[in-house]
Image (cartoon, rainbow, N blue to C red; front, side):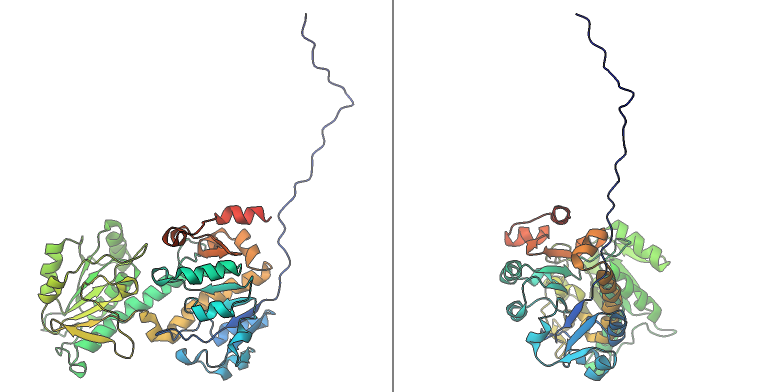
Length: 404
């Protein structure tokens, strides 16, 4: 039997359908709360009075706990002049829809947090507790972390700024402890004409290492840099634009250089947890008396075996006649500069969040911000934290798509 040909009617026509575009929602006014930080060594504040003034001029409200800016030398008067509401009761701050902190969420904060609040703060994964994370999940919190927040170029702007501050300040700190005033060996960092330059060893060629090298070179010191990443060593040389003495971390070479140095800086980063210990106790015991160690990596455990956490009030201890400076959160010692750096990133982000109609919408429209979200309406969206604490991980992209 012959196959029937398909019948096409002249009256049959196709019609195009309208494409539905994703239209940005109208902006909303944000109620932003800034609590006073009570955690160890924290002097920074995440929004400066100037930034608060800009937010208020754009129709947002800002509540700030009394004396929250004192650590960075900002008074309540500075904030009230900018238009912020000064609050004396911490619980009132936590009634705000967006909480902005310069220290990680604490147990005390968890008790005060209201359900469905948005929170922007550091996370400090190395010291994060499962109980805090669980309470935030139970309260359906959406949380954005400083460390993982990315800008349009794919970099972490707050981490970079804090690393620049830490790197630039380590040489000033080392110079302080090399002087007689602090019972150092009485050596001037950099030296002068006719005297061999001070020898500085930097372990780690990241942002901290780069800015430490820049400052040391500007002071006239002789700089040697160790890192296991050839790419980072090349990048550091290119950024500084000077041929530097560089090496991979080989214990014999490192030990030999440490024996004769005046300053040793630990600037390795702990990408996923603890920093590797690359300088043994034996290497430290062979260093010259009066040498200064500044271990910036102490935030993640430290890369010198002899390192122990110290405070801004009692920043140094001596072991094997070597001065150790091991204060975590070095940028907090330069709180005003650090606060301005954090504020420069958060103020535009909050303005954009308001324009987009809230955090849920900006996360949909700006893909780079998703990297910073570790909790989304109570779901854990950070794979590293889910592995560490054995909690259920949910892919943020799927979560957002399912809500559109």
